[in-house]
Length: 489
Image 1: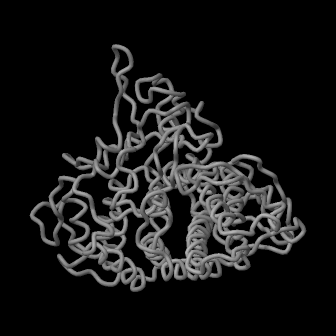
Image 2 (image 1 turned 180 degrees about the horizontal axis):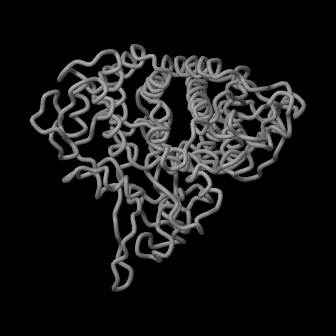
Image 3 (image 1 turned 180 degrees about the vertical axis):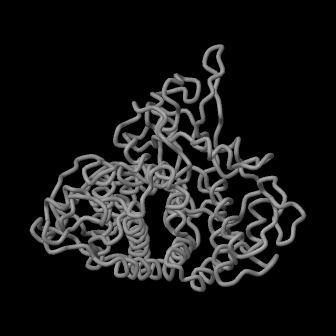
């Protein structure tokens, strides 16, 4: 974000960053990892270093811009309707992105920059004299962040370099090739297990927004689900669900209560990326990014509308009649002057920015509704049970949305889920509309091996389930970094 220096590491462009940040627990002093050995001396230094690691989530290659492009625009949820929104984004939307397209390089570089910050915390904290409990907690938070970043990378690129130590010398990086996905997943699971065992379920005051035990458990459940380890996924997700008894997490009474600046970090939101407008570049861009080009101030009152994440007609039609989630997630028109303009746009992230691309809206990475639907999916994959527990969790989501429940022998064909295959599609549909524009759809389609079937008409081919490795990384270290199948160097 600020004061960025670039080095080559692992055929990886690692950006060593020092930046100011957002919200209470991320306020910190500038850090330069190039002279890090002189920095990490006190508990306060480590607090600041951990804050810098959290700041990595705001990078352009992570939740500032890349993850919604990959998670939604790559899928059938959103699209680019105006080429002025950016040719590289159009290429992603149309399955024409190449190894030289910026989405790959930005995502790769941003994640490895953030991983370097996380590794610095984990490595340097070992020798810092400080309270043992606080040291363990900081380490656990850092491990959660590292797991999240590698989970993104392995799902986007497949095999990736697994770097778990600080790279101090650019020459060291040339020793790292692409580790098999299984090794990356093993590290993710190890990090999340350590995080779960150490972190508390909740923070208060200025520490709200940090990774918690529930965040580690929820992400671990998603990792197991992605690996098709249904029993472990179900067991872990059920542990999160069981926390509703002690009011740790809950499905909020209304869908409207989940979103909006006034509702951030609520009981349904398990982990959010924190943003703060008017704080030297710590605001979120979504209000402007998702507003239609040409809408002036009709959709967002401050800054330029960029038209980068426009709901498709298919997405609009995916909502059932009377689904309260649609109006709270997207709209089909806006009023400009005296004219009504027919144009889809996302409303989940609306707000009044302090300036263009500078709003308060957080990005929800994990929430309780996601957990309920993942648990229903895991139960069904272990064996379909007519009107069994999986139906209960699926229907909790539907009931809140104002929709009738689905059953195994419903008189209405639209509400009948008669076998395991039908339940799979029911979960897929519910995840699409419940989690719309939250960056899940593409990963859901890939995980369930439905991407090619659903997206074939958009030009998708089997190799598109992975993004191309950035050409810049191959050029840096051609002996160890090879391209994904289907893409040319």
